[in-house]
Length: 246
Image (cartoon, rainbow, N blue to C red):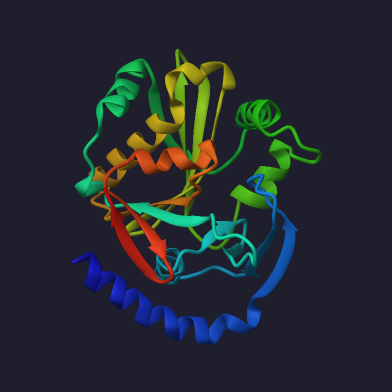
């Protein structure tokens, strides 16, 4: 069934792409994932998109950054590979089951994407602890990356005893969920919150009967990105075809 779905998406995206390709530009910057190459973002800024248009972009391997949609077209590197899950197929392994058990005390709440001082404080703590670069601020991430006017977005908060320990930024469609970003308290690293978050998103997709969960990019050599490959089965996008792995 997924093959027929992907074929329909490819055909529709070809038509959509022909209408919007003039909007896209290529922008070169240093690799945000620490690879020793120049990264080339093929991107365009959009006004509000239909739910189906966003679905087609995701199925074609595009990602969202604010109101921009982009794909990677780097000349000297092909490490970024789009990855998605089909939640109905997923079966947790022992490590993932342990991650669920370690977080039995965590409460979850799904909220509109409206950042509070508490959200920004935790995001700032995460960025300074994990990615302490100049101009890497929570305020910038929210205003330039998370917040948007093109799709429906929300945040899934994780709390222990009322204290915020993590937050997932997600885009939500009728048949898809897009994991935009996840930040958490670095002092809670023993909880394996990155894994726990994906497990919770899988459960959310199952509850809502959402067929596709997009996890962004899988990069084998970057631990912060490669752990996504521990969820089986998963699908990687090679050229324009989603290929099952595991």
